Amino acid sequence: METKISGEELPYVVCKLQKGESIVTENGGMSWMDDAIKMTTTTNGGIMKGLGRALAGESIFMNVYTAEKDDVEIAFASSFPGQILEFNLNEGETIIGQKRSFLCAEQTVDISMHFRKKIGAGFFGGEGFIMQKFQGPGKVFLEIDGAVYKRELASGEKIKVDNGYVAAMTSNVDLNIETVKGVKNIVFGGEGLFLTTLTGPGTVWIQSMPISKLAGMFYVGGSK
Image (cartoon, rainbow, N blue to C red; front, side, top):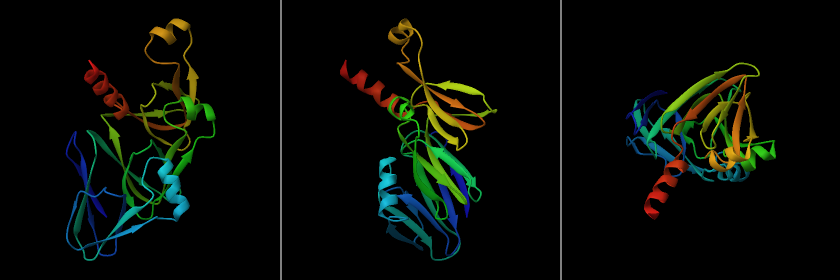
């Protein structure tokens, strides 16, 4: 499968399929496609796996698009301004993504929910108690809010991130929460009571404008 990401701040990915190749997306995820592509709606792993995806912000049912001849194209556009990240995963390789980040993937990629073991990270960390897990082999595409900062963390290296800014990470990165110290910092600092902490080794992708922050700005502006 050949792929090309275009569109700059309003990105889309075009996938060129050969006969028999398939690609998966959530309901309503396809933007345009050639005629010789067959669509099939499925739970893609059973109803329990579908329910798990629903908890992670995706739909229970997914659409599988299969090419019926060579060199046909299908496109998937991001639902908000930002970037599309492409991961070409090897067998067993895993990427963890934020809720609702999934755009599309080869049918060989296993898509499931990622359950945070530490309750504090779920309730207060801003990334949610449940995230998304993508395991290879195959290509997977994630849609990210705003611009993306990629950071490689050495073993034991830690960075602190404001809530909602973690877009994706490799599975060996530890995500937890840390309480902001000092009453003045909590009350007047504007960062809230908790910060997300990411500890290496591994790779993290941080987004510059979480859609939740953008929605909050519009809400505040509209209330004036």
